[in-house]
Length: 327
Image (cartoon, rainbow, N blue to C red):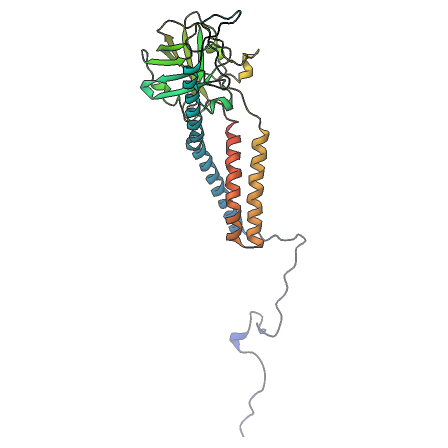
């Protein structure tokens, strides 16, 4: 008689663990002990992705601002120059000499908000109407005459500031001038020819270049080097024609303190508008991002983009006023 087969349920050798017990289905795995501190699951991929998007957005904004400064500001300046020259030429044909008590008979009164003259530098292609004042709003229109200095053609040191890289960059190539190069300035008193005599680079606070001089000269100032406001380039030219009589023009009164002009940088602008428009642009972008997540992405961005670009343009215009006036 054959022995009966054993009915034992002992697991096979390959199903046994190190202790000889079944690995699966029989005994539950021991639970891991929980630590007393809560674990934070940090997805570094999301952090890297968010940082990358932020940097890309910042780079695009910087690129747009640079494009606005180098090219966008020139459109408005060219429009202002056209209007200033037209008004100035018209005033030359309609102005008359009106003798008044205490005023010389050859005095010509310039209309308010008009150009005080037109400066021409053939070597570097400058043909610009000169406005009165060196503030941010003044130099946006063209080169500006420093208040408190003689008008071009008058005896003494007439001083003019101009942009180097923005708002048409009228003085962009000023560094190319050499001794003997001609500079012509046309005012209501006539046309005057200067010849370049010297050039130098000074710090922005060295306002002594604007001081009165015994000789008749014109001093041109602009930022140096290009695309920077670290220094100021000074071009001095000597009057090579007879000086004009003193003209009664609507000059801004000279400041009691030269530091009120912020050195050779012109008057500064308030920061409040730039901050306000910047916050508004950021708010519009955040609202568009939220609407894209809660509603539909592309319709939200299509609606918000034109509004954002308009606000961004106004922000750029106000932010650029915080830069030195003659950059």
